[in-house]
Picture 1: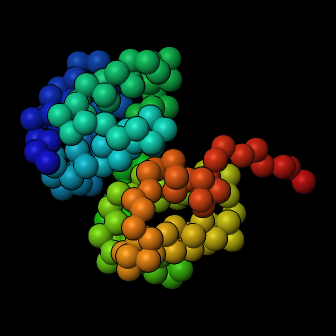
Picture 2: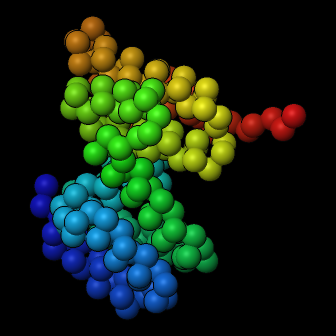
Picture 3: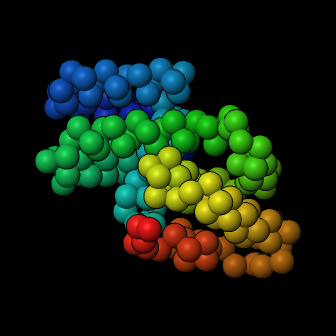
Length: 182
């Protein structure tokens, strides 16, 4: 989809509404995407899918949805921008398969080989859970294994069902769970 005009407009919005540090962070993100506005648009669509609990935004409404999300959560503006930036790093790692851990890299390679870009929101969510220490490495491996199993079965046409974001979350156990502190 063509996201260029929406992302250009979004960066103008950032310049007029965010603090200088946050604007710098968004331009740092843009630079890490090699100024590819369409790729940033794809990322933001997946990010919004996570933030909207699996509701996929319309391609023509990325700008509107990001602005609404930021305005709805304006009390946390600094955290929201930081969160977008953090998720953008996960997205780029997924796209370019740049993981130091072999098991994670293998799972992401499998997902990419099956052209399962529709599970990127789930994958970013899983990675975030691990990086913010809500899941340990074994849990990460188990969630990735379950996700790749779903992708492979769908790819091999064993299961003709197309799963939604929420269906995948349910199958891999990503429903909001409280972790016990031992």
